[in-house]
Image (cartoon, rainbow, N blue to C red; front, side, top):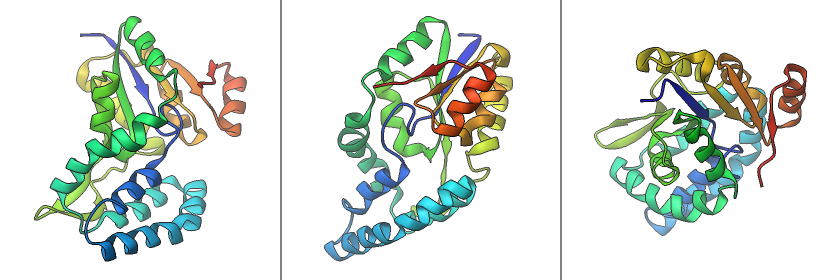
Length: 221
């Protein structure tokens, strides 16, 4: 097995979508017409709050947002994930995403997705890209129903860096030889913890940080 890994953020880095788009698909493809309408309206009304929370506190955003999954069936969530990938994530992949993954593979890296998304929504994407592993949030289920709570620790910010460090220790990987890819300054800790960070389609703050630290910058199409 490779002695190093390439850790990829997903939203904005490999795909143009985010977790709100993913939930919106679930909201419009599950249950009765009344239930669908209610969840769709709830998501739409929550968009301004989502934006504010995401900008101020990513952890609070994740905790708040995932409450919208409460009551949904685990079996149904996993089943719909396959269609959601085909309809939402696959069309949103940057054209150069697979090339980026393949280049990391050729350099001898294990390919790992590190994302604040829910794990069952990422598995079809990981298979499609040929990834080796996924580090993602896990929804709590009781009696086959989602509680709307994520099993801690929530994968975001500094916790992404902690998860990467723990993964490398567990798998015997050389952290200082590992690569990290992200588009957001909220993932600064994730990029700083690896030996070879790269800013991909970076936001303004991350672009500034990347220039200050002389990190490579990639703008995918």
